[in-house]
Structure formats: C-alpha cells, structure tokens
Length: 284
Image (cartoon, rainbow, N blue to C red; front, side):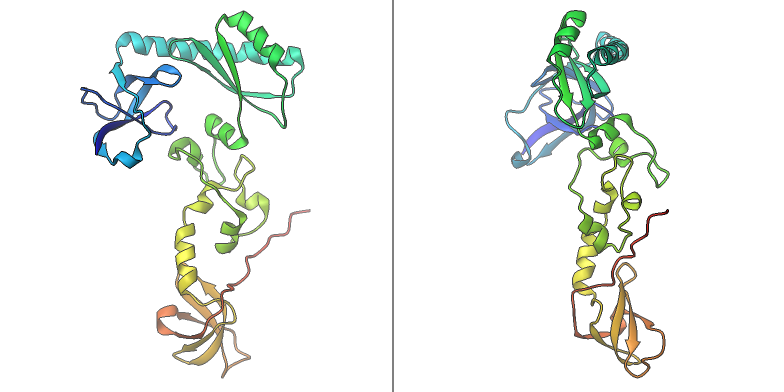
C-alpha cells in the first residue's frame, strides 16, 4: 500500500495520484505539484489515503508545496493571459487561412509554454502559425488537435436531458459507447435521439448497460415458450427493467398478450432475441 493524494488540474478533469510527501492535505486545497510538463497548480480532489501499489503508475510525482497567495495570483494572471492569447491566435488563424477551429488556450503554470487546442476535419499544416505565435508570445508554443468529445468537455453546455453535460460535471474520462447499447436498451435508433451535442453517441448509454446485460441473461426473449399462471404461451416482448414479459397464451391466441412478472412464470424454451427497438422515422 502507498499513501497518495488525488489532484485535478481542472474542475472536470481526471484525477491523478501524487506523493503527498510530508503534507497532510484535504479536499479543496490548492497545491503545486511536479508533473511531466513541469510545475503545475492543481486542486486536491482526494485527501491523503492509501491505495494498492498496482493502481499507481511509477514513478509517483511529488507535491512541491501548498499553494501560496503568490501562486494563486500567478494562476489568476494566467487565466487572463489565456483570454488575450485566444483572441490573438484566432486572428492569426484567419490571417493564415487555416481550416481549423480554436477551442481553448492553456498557459503552463510557469509560463514556459502555451497550449492551443483546436478541432479540424483533417490534418492541418500549422507550422507557419506556430512560428508566428512564437514570435508574438516569446515562449514555447504547442498546438494540439482534439476530438469533438473533448471539445464538448472543454466548452460545456446543456444536454437534451436539460442538465449540464456529464463530461463537464463528473466524468473524468470517456468510455467506449456503441450502437449495440442503444439496441440492448430498446432505444430509438434515430441518431438525433441518441447522440449528444458533440454528435457522438451519448455517454449515458453506458450507465445502465451492465444492468441490461445482466437482465438479458435472465429474461426470456421474443418467441420463448413459457408457462404462466394462466397456461402456456409465447413471449412477444420482454420489459427488462420491470422484469415483466408479455405473453400470447396458447389457449387464447386471438386475445392481446397478457403481462406477467418473470417470477410468476417458468421458462420452457428460451430464445435470445428480445423485442426489436422502435426506430423513429426522420421528420420530413
């Protein structure tokens, strides 16, 4: 076991482990830490605690000091400089006629480097832009192309659920999301209904997927044969989260399917297919 603290460098960023050395730190404190990019100012997300050695990427970087008023002043000045750099870089992008969209600017804590984040449909030759910016800011310049999900995380916004984006509030990293998840959950396969503002599949499709997969192993699929309290019948639909099935009884083939709790039925022959998802037709 190793004692660590968790530090974030932005409000919605990933938490990284650091060696607290001799400091006793609590959540919310600002600290200056050693990183691969040099000294950085971060916020303690997890105070002193122990974790398994297997969870740590060695070598573990150290906490240099608890942030002073001077450190906080430097960080505030950097935020102001980032706003100015954003406008200047956008002007130079336009002047060079580059097909790229500037998303964010980040100053290194010691101002030894400025990172410009952008999106573009393909590769962009920004060598002349880098030279131009280096001449203006007199420091090291780095341009980093990011994806649309990272752009949404940086810019923030309100999702179709009416709440702030998950990626800007609590998700510290993106997980793979597939169209299979939407099918498993019997959701509409209309891209406009299952895509976020970033035009990628919504991250929240992942949240309940494990529950759907577990229930799919238990519940009978469409065309399964079951014994109900009212006799034998064929499953026409499985409602996973309610643990209910709709059954067309052999004794009443012309009646609408009856609804039963899965615990009240006995599966005689199980198939894997569930009811097909409802597919919306795009509006004309």
